[in-house]
Image (tube, rainbow, N blue to C red):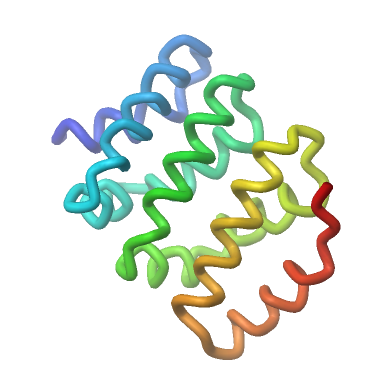
Length: 136
């Protein structure tokens, strides 16, 4: 597999060090606009990032959240995410229930970007839930 696929696979490893390193590298790659559609389209990248935001260490959560915010700037990734029901559910739950404020804000930021960029009926349902969230 390619480099991006190896990174995505590393995100899901149980080793905290491997997951943190992979999340940090994904974040670094996501800073380059031209790499965002390719990285977001690699395997289950968006799902793995959401899982790390949910269950990873604090460092991995922050890196994955920042990466997700960068990736969702791409229209291709917005279209991928709106069809990924399990990822949307994780992000909605994080936006509503996350204790870590950074994770909560990243999840809500990603959802708002998707709603604004994609539109449609599904986006309107997400928008109603996101508008109801209280961010401190």
